[in-house]
Each structure stands twice: as C-alpha cells, then as structure tokens.
Image: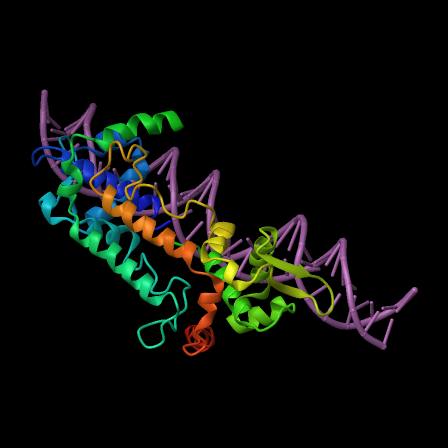
Length: 150
Length: 150
DNA sequence: CTATATTAAGATAAAATACTCTTTAATATT
DNA sequence: AATATTAAAGAGTATTTTATCTTAATATAG
C-alpha cells in the first residue's frame, strides 16, 4: 500500500479541518468523532502535523487544532511527507539500487513516469481542493460505511 | 511503499531465475548468494511462490527451484499477487470507503487513472521482459551496491 | 486560586512484518 | 543401507506499525 494508515488518518483529518469554516480551533475529540478514529491515536498523528507546522494547536478550553496556513497553501504532499517521509515511492519497482538513468532496468521508464505522475498530483492538489466537493461529501459517507464495517 | 520487502525479494529472485538458461533446478542458496538475501528468508518467500505454482521445487541433490512456466508467461503481477495479495493499491487515496464512481472524492479520477496504469503495467510485464536486458544487468550491480550499504 | 478543558508526552500493548534457527522430509549417490 | 544434499515446515526473535492508557503541561473561567 502506498500510504500508511497513519498518513491516511492525517489526510482525512486535514481535509476535514479544511472543510470547516473559519479560523477557530477545532478539538481533536470533534475530529476523531466525525472520522471514527481513536481519539488518542489521532492526537498522536496530529501532534506530528503540528510539529511540521502544518497545523497550529492550542491547549485549554476553546483550544484545539487548526490549519497553520490557508487550505489552498497546504498540499496533499505536505501531509504525506510530514507523516510518511520523503521516500514513499522507491526509485525502482524491483528495489534495485543500481537502477537509474545510466543503467535502467526494463521497468525503469514506465515506473519513473508513473512515479512522477503520482508525485506531481500530490504536489498539485491542495487541501482546499480536497475539501471542495461538499456535494459528494465522502467524509460524511465515511462515517456510515465505517460504522457498518466495525 | 507500494510493495513489501518480501515481495521485492520474490520479484528479484524470480527475475534472476528467468535470466538463467535452461530448465534445470537452481538452489535457493545460489539465488540467495547472488541476491545477497538471507538464505532462510528467501526460502520462505520462494515457498510461497511454489505454493502459488509460479515456481516448481525439487528436494535432494540436484534439487532446487525453477519457474513453473516459461518466463514469458509469468507476469510481475503474478508474483505480486502471490506475495502481497490483490489489494496492493487502495480504491481511494484517502482511504474513504464511500469514494467511487457515484460519489467520487476530488482525487478520484486522477487516482484511479494512475491506479489503472500501475496495475496494467504489472499485468503486461513478464519475467522474460524483466530479465531481458543483460546489458544493464541491474542484478549484478545490486550485489556491489548492496554490499557497500551494509 | 481552584476546577475544568484541552493538547503534549510517555509508557505500554497488540499486531503485522521481517528475519533466524532448527528439525523434518525427500531424493540422490555411494 | 548410510550419508549427503536440498527444500519444507515450524518455532522463535526482532523490528515496525498501530493503538491504547496514563500522566503532565497549559490555558481558561469562575
């Protein structure tokens, strides 16, 4: 699987935050309830995003977390790198360290093209875009489907 | 990371087997030496490929493993499915179970296009093709680079 | 100042993945 | 029949990922 579970939780929470109006802090409890993710685990994940300065947090009553920048200025990639690190996709599909421009394996061209596509998408898509389609509201849907599965 | 370590070991060994001439059994020891993978661990991995009938094995002197079919008739995908299973790529990049044709998330089109590309490549590329470029010989290279890293 | 709300941090546990070691079974050679 | 060679099977260990629980730190309200 390309992204870790942890990373997907971070993405969902970030998108949900982006979809909320205004600039006020949202409690992690509220996020974890809406996303059906364990409160404590989500706390850990969001701590990481806070460390990376993608989120801003505030303790005490009326505290919580919020995006540190406008949603249009935080990318999918920002979140992925913060949680899963830079190397989400290996250079070579076979993991051959020798594979590269000079001595490509037979998969090299196809693989690196796809790799670039994925990375470009991640760099291009912002949380604002991800939060945009209120119509389909996948996050709301998530709740019901997830609930059924458990 | 898309594929597990175990799966990449299986792929490397399969490609190496495909690159060897003839129809005779090759010992796992020989493969593990060439690939610098632990003999015991590679044994486990190859047992799985044997169970899936991608490899054929033979015990005793002059025993070993070999491809169960011509290298042109075993795909990258065959090996991946045998080791990592069918679900190497999630439906939705955000892992939203509600996401689909009916209610796509904003990433849906791009993501499923890329997903299809990756799966198509895996289905299309055979071990024969992967073993073909003797020139670049990434497997030989592997040995030296890998040795340096350790 | 005290009680309460909230994130941060740390310790622990459970599960999955990666890897190792030992024994057993099959086959061949002598 | 004895011995050597080899994969299969099973048990065990280590590491990473995922998750939980507890305590601390910080802020607010009264």
